[in-house]
Image (cartoon, rainbow, N blue to C red; front, side, top):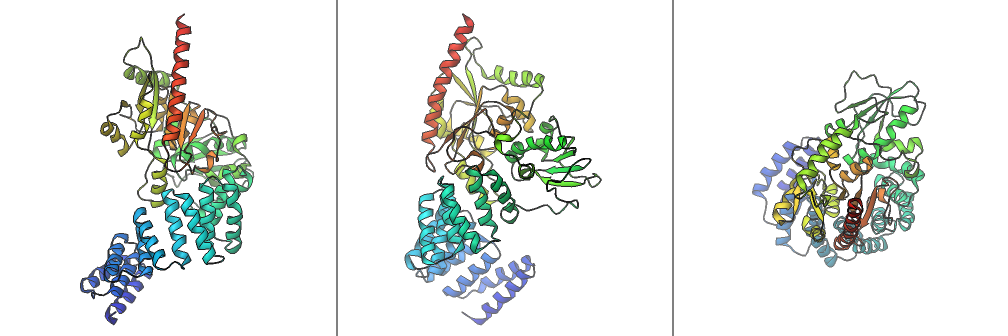
Length: 504
């Protein structure tokens, strides 16, 4: 490799380390115009683009290097990593398998392949490759963590804990391992230890707030104090954990809740909340603050001791007016009423967060896969689906009526839910909304279910009005959909029997 490009690479890295990323990009983009036609230079260019987090350009130069020298396991490995970072899981898996084929003794290759396969939902293979990586390199923390994670995703959280413990013994400050252990503890119902360990999210997947000068509440006396409770994670998390705020009011606090604008109007109706805001005002006289998901640990609560449902509400007149209008618009023949069932089949893909996007791919289902439900007579299906996925109604031609026009916030959605007899949804904020309102909701859960739903139960103490239908294996939507279709038929038969009895 010519020395001139090596020197240029050192200059680019110096600029990047100094935080001048734009100048580093400018120098790199200029330098690759005269890049020598040989594999090492192309590989170095790929490494520099990877350092600058330009996954597409890094992929381009790694492929160029491999075109010049295909027998290069290290480059296949890096290609796999940038494909993973760029969201191309299939490409990442192919590249890493080639790296292993060319050099089967490298533990990191198996470990990274296991990570990719876990992101794809291929958890059995992820477990196998993580175990191989562990066998090739003793005390390799990422390998041990990946074994634990794969076991957790396979619904074997109890088995995962010794592996998390082993990884943490080697790396006590590793936030990924500690957070993974928290999830396993919560999934098996060990909430006391799980809530405590869940605080490691701030060292793993969450960014703590830096705009608050008041202390973090750690459970001390709240008498006469004003506390800010703030949204974290997704809408569903806020809808689930908002139930704990009135307990702070009962402890003597003035409670101010900060949430995204679309939640404000709904939460303003809750007892025990003094004020709901979306923008923090510098003049607010705060004494303490606490993120919402941190409340149950500080209050010493579990799902079984959490405040009862419903804790969310909609004014009765809005239930009647908005819900009634929905029913009237959907029912074609009022003299032969049918059940109305709401559907949500996709979550928020969150394209700015590659990990969240990959989880969303596993939890979301195409509307087409719900087609067997449409074969159940006596039901009118309506869609509460938002975002691009709502276009699937027109694309599939399935008999689903969109009822989202004019919805601007969760209060609007909540009112319309009173017009349906049942909501069927994948694991999104909608199940928390319906559950918090105490309305019937059937949730279709991915096989690697979120910790809050446990591992096997069809019900949850979080929401007594919810029933859970689980994938038996990753990607298998047919099984829960068939189960739901069978129960819907029973539901319709019972509904018609009750109507006949009332008519008699």
